[in-house]
Amino acid sequence: NDDKPALLIQDNGPGFPNNGVDGQTGEEVDDGLRYCLAHGGAISSNDIEGTLIGRFHAGLTLGVSCQSPKTEVFTRSDEDGDNFRFNKIDFTDLKKNDNKLPKTTFKDPNIHGSIANLLKWSEGTGTIINLCELDNPDRKSVRRKGGLNDYLKNELSRTHRNFLTSGVEIYVDDELLRPYDPLMLTPRGKWYDIIGPGKIIEDTTLLVEDLQEEEQRVRIKIAMMPVDKIRANPKWNIKFMKRYDLTPERQGFSLIRNGREIASGESMGLFTKHS
Image (cartoon, rainbow, N blue to C red; front, side, top):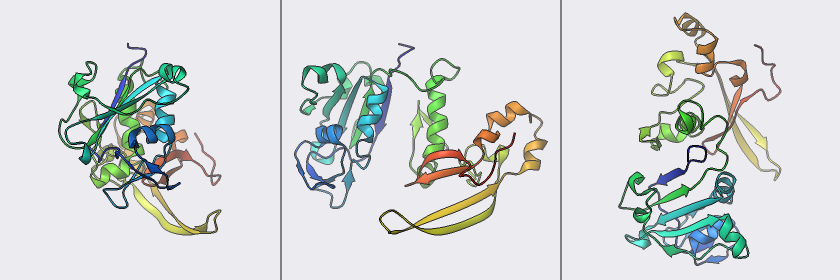
């Protein structure tokens, strides 16, 4: 369905644990996949000391539920051998079952006709998340040229640029993403050869006290773009500026937390944006 496409997310991580302990409450968990989908939480696998699964807390459940009325999750950890465990968040089924998720079962994702030909690996651990029907795809992502693929490529390459730079590989429709560093300080990054390199004019670390009166470190880096190089480009015009995120609304601070961008183009009340 072009208006309500599906979205398939795969990773080759350790998978959801079969059982473990909730890192926040200390509760013993005997169905790790179902528990994480129902409660979020940080489940520490009994087999891997100190490894936390579900750092997203309720983020996965809330995220997929906002996008799709039905989401299927297949996962395989070391203790599963060749089998995938399966569970789902299905609004229709939840209404019929007193808002309770079903118990986790074993299911082979390869027999699922709509995704079998899209699976990228058949061995090892990992997780497959199938958002079966995107209820309201973000912004112009579906109908415009390039569609949802382009939107995901642009957003993921920027949001997760630190992970991409460190060697994590993210693919969208078989294309390996390049990190997009808006400061243009990453030589192999997206657009670096066109509008880079940036020049650091400030790099400092501040010590601040949080609400728990604990000291935290905040690093601030400010860079200038090579204005002369950009304006000398023969294609330089307003469309060029929009194409490469150089418009006033994109200027400002990019906020990074735990290696992931959570906001961009923020003035932080320190300056006024000009056209």
